[in-house]
Image (cartoon, rainbow, N blue to C red):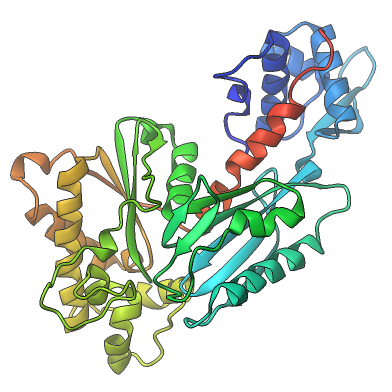
Length: 399
C-alpha cells in the first residue's frame, strides 16, 4: 500500500530534510525491518541525519523500536526498527451488486475489519445513509486504541460529484437522489473523499505497476454492471458531470423493450450485465448467485458459452469494447469482473474484439486480467494516507 512514499513531497514546497525523512521511512517500509546503520549505508546519509530523523519518527509513532540486534565482531548491539502500520487507519466504502461494503485498513493496506450490508433496490436516501453510518460505526468500534482515523474514502456507482461530495444517483437504487455524503459524514471530523466506482480501481493498478502510467490505460469491467475508466500518462480522466466511461448505458438496441436500471431502454447492460442475464442463466443453472465474488467462483468452472443469453452478451460486449477502443486507442486494456474469470468467455471476448477493430491496430494491443479483490477499497484511501503522512514526514528541526 505504501508506494512511492519517497516522492510524497514532490510538486510542493519542501526542504531537503523533509525529502530525506520520507526516503528513510520508505526504505524502512520496503525492507520491513532495518537498523540505523543499515539505513545509513543503503541511503548514503550522514549517521547524525539518520539518527535525528529516526528519533522524530519514533516520537511520532510512525516507527517503533524492537530488540537489540547483535553484530558480529566488536561494537554495541544495534536496535531493529519497524514501520508502525497501525499509526493511521482509514475507512473505505465500496459497492458490490446492491451490497455496501466497508473496510477498516491500516497504512499497509491490510484490512483490520470489514462489514457488509445488503441494501434493497427500493431504498431511499435516509435508509442508505443509515446503512452507511451503521457500517462506519461498526468499523470504528474495532479501531485500535493507538491508531488515528485519517479519513473516509467511498468508491460509488452511478453519478458522483466528487468536488461537492455528493452522491447524485445510482441505477442500483432508483430512489437515491443527491445525497450530500461528505456533509452527512462530517460528524466523524475527518476528511471524506468520494470517487466514481472504477476510478480508485484504476488508480490502484497505476500505483502497483509503473508501466501502466505510460501512454493510455483502459480499465474495462464486466460484472453486475458494465463500465470503464481511462488514464493518460498516469492520470485518470474524469468529467465535471460526475460520470465517465459509462459504456454499460450505451444504447445498443434502440427498439428494445428491455428497461435498463438507469431508466432508458436497450442499454448494453440490459443485454449483458449480470443483473440482466441472471434470470435466463438460472434456467440452466438455478444455483447461479447474484453476488459478484460468488458468481466469479461459480463461473470459473462452468462452460456456459453455448448458452444463447451468454453468446448474445459476448457479441454486444465485444462490439462495445471495440468501439470504446476506437475512442481512446489505449496502449493496453485491463479486464476486470466475474465474466472475465471464465477462460472460454475471455477468449471469445478477445476474438470478437479483434474482429471489431481495424486490422492495422490489432497486433500491439496488450490485454491483462486484473484482480478486483480489494483494489477499489485500497485505491479510495490511498490519497488519505498520503495526505496524513505528508504532514508527519516533515522534519521539525533543521537536522
